[in-house]
Length: 329
Ligand code: GLU
Image (tube, rainbow, N blue to C red; front, top):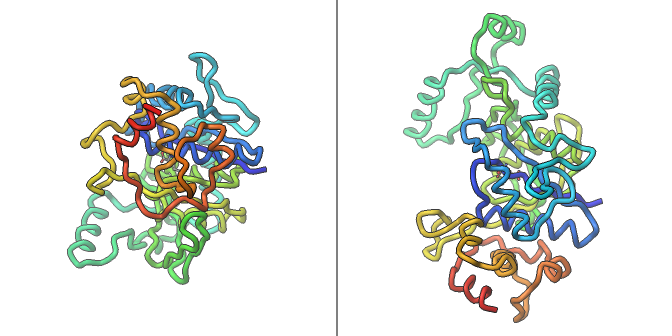
């Protein structure tokens, strides 16, 4: 069964780009009788916003995009539905701990004791000398027994992915086709932060696997993380899902869509009186080209007509006049 998910971080409102990601994930699941899940990725405690989850859910429900499984709403109440939960990452910490330990035990991850100051110095040096930035693997040399002693002694540490330094990682992106990264340029990503919290990278791979996600649809900004995720799938011996990275949303001047040039929150459009049908139709066509003249689609029609193969690689311009046109129609 095809299973997709929308996995927002509750750092604030639902962005129109997030609405498009959720919509595309929803459409490809619905058109084949699959399931659309909602998972809350709240491992970044510094950017956590208390009512973020509620805001995101309310905007999604307003747009008519309701999850079949995961974090959902019943009236005003947030609940979790399904047998693969919990679907909120801060309730899954034991799972990530177990996976981090498995990687450490198999030599696929290592403890790193580098201080923020050292990492900053390293970065400055790399930038000054026009070298690729990234961790230099200094702590790879530390014997695991020695590392254990230092940890028992209370030394601050993180856990890093041991990325192979030779070869390449290739995957087939459903929008971009074959994408290849040189492993030597992929960073030894932090998987567990010093406070013991997992990073997005460890949590997303574990969860997508355990929740049987078959298709990961997400923004282009995550594409450079995908080789790290694929390496994690290999280390765990799991099959990686299919990936589709959506093009960026742009302002009319082709800069990345930002708050400075207008509203980006779905809730702002709702407040201004835009119809959910108009906003959904509008974001559906940001990057997706159905071919032909037709532009007006209801959500049910989108379920029938949408295909990822017709999503462009190039950034899509967010044109407010066009949204107004849809709203009038
Ligand atoms: N939590 C990530 C975000 O908010 C999800 C990225 C993904 O879909 O893998 O963008």
